[in-house]
Image 1 (tube, one colour):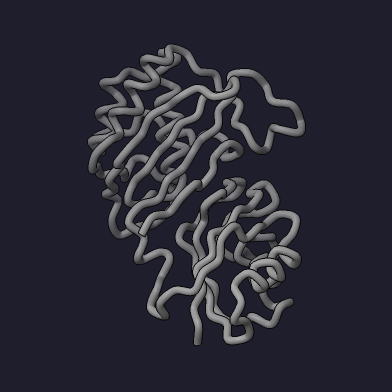
Image 2: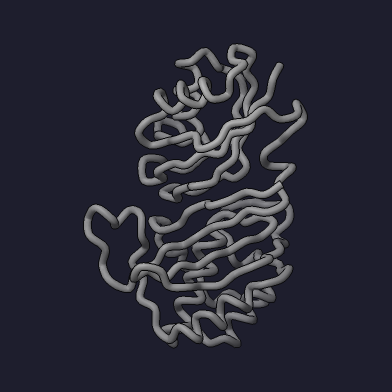
Length: 240
């Protein structure tokens, strides 16, 4: 059966995360419902399980369908059924063995931060966080680069067999009055990005020393344990 790869965007504020939830709306649940309305009822696979409130501009999913030969027509039909919280940005045929999660080489996130309280119309799309010394903030972020055991940078109660992840790029920049953090790595633990950026912000405000941050990155001692708001966090790309 033909397999498709789709790059999708979604408004994370409408869902309790990507994965299916009992009695709560999820991205995967909405995808299943929308796909069923065009006759597609098979398994839908995703590249990343984003948390509650986390948005996406570059999530990758795959699915099978024998009903449509024209990808453009299928994309338009799906977008009509998934509106307004999910949109298919790109759709293409792929090999039948393609797996969006296991074949991914990297994932990238952008975190949109505002030092000023956003308007009610922006508050679910930007995280309201005070930044202190921006040079210190950048220094703290750079400490995460490379391969580390991030066991102390994951949400309590989340189980993973391996907590080692490799961060390829991490930096911040300013754009249109916002501070934006870009992070690219081979994978991320649950709430890892929110904990990493939160710790770097704490360093910038003088609440956490670079030495203590280094100790936590080395998985020796936990000094910081407060995932910041997911509102401004976007999964922006997955690479293969």
